[in-house]
Length: 117
Length: 108
Image (tube, rainbow over all chains, first blue to last red):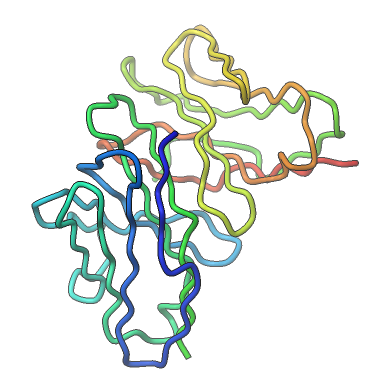
């Protein structure tokens, strides 16, 4: 079945540093990937849609200069949290839509828990 | 905003069928209903989706009312591992937007 690998699963960083999270589709090609964030006991919030070979589309209220998304290949999208602050601490989850698979069935990564000190 | 309404929580005895309702009264004719679930601290998992006919797979059954304004996800024999938050989703602008979901507690 379709597998999405997300790395790292946990990261702790100091305030002001940048953190990169990788999302890979292991056994299928994904022209579209989605990035979500989730605060404790809250639902997932869509941050942006990542399209291979083009700029990401950000949801309203999400700073594109702070959350840099790159989707350089059909199997890899990265999210970089720049100049991280404690309020950026959250659970970040990526998902991938299989190319040519039709319906909106997404495969999600296991998530990356970011803690900014 | 999510286009669906779900009860915030439900309990179900282990071994019994869990029936999770979802209201999607504003659904359009060509919009599918999707169900995902999220077990604590993991990424969401796809369960099932449907348009107007009832659907069944190895995980669950999906019953959609004739007017398509509501649906029910059925886990036929709930186990403790089915404890999770279940999300009923109608795609909006080609994006999967999560509502608050239903927190399902399976009671031993």
